[in-house]
Structure formats: C-alpha cells, structure tokens
Length: 101
Image (cartoon, rainbow, N blue to C red; front, side, top):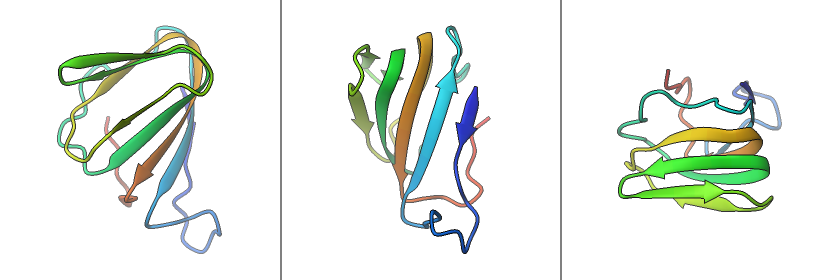
C-alpha cells in the first residue's frame, strides 16, 4: 500500500482540523484487525477499483468511481481491496501522530 498524508506544520497543506489520505492498495490488501475506538469521523471515496469497508452490522462495497462511505467517531471498521484500488480518505479532526497498525 502507498499512503500519503501530510502532517508537517508550516506546510500550507497541513491542518489540525482535517487530514486527507491518498491510498493505493493492491488486490487483496486488507486491514487484518479492526480499528477500534476511532477518534475521527471519516469519508472514504473510491477513485478506482473495488473496495469493501466493514462496519458494525454492515458491509459496504464501493465499486464505481465516486462511490463513498462515511462513518462517525467511535465507529469500529476494517477494509479490504477486492481489486487493485485507489481511495481518497478525508478524516476530521486530524490527530497528530495517529496511526493504527
């Protein structure tokens, strides 16, 4: 997976309010363990490919460019790239140094 996010203070693309992540995932790439106790709200938009997001009680398949899913603070989640996929994730607020496995 290639993920780019900017957290460098002073960079005009840096914000403590929101963060943007560009993710490139090969087919079969997945989050092995669920993210628990998420501290942010997230919007994930499919750019290309086929990408599945698992949320409590539902599974969301993103299969057309522009398909998206939003989940709130405190919502556990996981994901899997069913085909090579590019996704754009917007999360707020930004949590400095936050990274889950």
